[in-house]
Amino acid sequence: MKKILSIASILALGVMLQASAVSAHVDIVGIESGTLFQFPAGMEPTLDGDLSEWDIVPEDYYVPFESHFEYYLGLGHENDESNLSFRVVAGWSQGTNRLYFMMERFDNYWDRNGVGAVAGGDDSWEIMIDSDHGGDQHWYAAGDFESEEEHQRNQGRYAQNAHCRFPPLEPFGWKWWFQSKSTWHDVPPWGDYGFQLDGESNAGEVTARIEIMSAAWDDFHWVGPTESEPEHTFVEGNTIGLGWVVHDMDNDAEDNSGSTGGWGINPNIQMWFDCGNCSDFLLAPTDPRVDFSQMVTGTAVEEESWGRIKAAYIQQ
Image 1 (cartoon, helix red, strand yellow):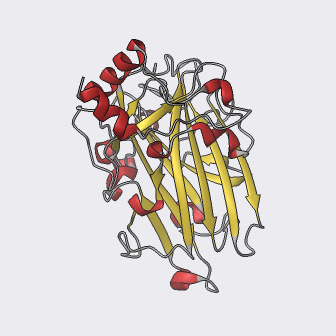
Image 2: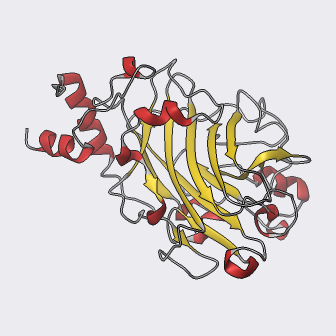
């Protein structure tokens, strides 16, 4: 049965459409506008690598593999899905004031041994978060400041960037914040993950299932959470900046002759340096197509596409 939109849903759609008009930093190929799916309070995904809870998210929130741009090998959008393929979706919750990320990834070789140079030498998911949408720089060279103390204070201060690598290995765990001395950002309540791997690390084809939860800060301090207060407060209808690069380390026996590939959400690889090169994502209201009461028992997504719902609203 088709869902009849309530006036509350229509008003929520109006907020979304108005917020979508914010000028983007860098567009995502094939995506009209980046959108963060809202999980109602108490219905956030369990971080265990079981992605079935994400089945409620309509397909039009996903950023597919073909939207990503490969930098290092010069492939651009000409990608070989027998080597690598993935899909990504991001969400948020007012209840927890956290961002949530999910990736389902096929890879013909899962590299996780801590050996190498680029991205720490392993397959990783590098995520940049610009919560106040300021387009701030988040990495600085040592010579950019007069003292190492000042240098370290400003690393990731106004926007954050880290490599997420699984399974976790010491000394950097699962979330390697390569430019910061922080040791607390990757543990609850500020960060957590779920991970399942069909296959074996460093041994051939795999399917990886990844879930990530993260806080964000408008003035981060590596020393500790007290010094970093307050955390950024996510507000429905606001726009934040997000970027990510999916790194693929193939060995000599695999594709790319041992070369490193990097697939970014947009063509601007400088997002690893500053979030002026990230993409815009709207903190969406709860989607009126989704019946959250069916999160466990069955499908929760109506047949109507998001585009058709928006078109219906515009015609009002």
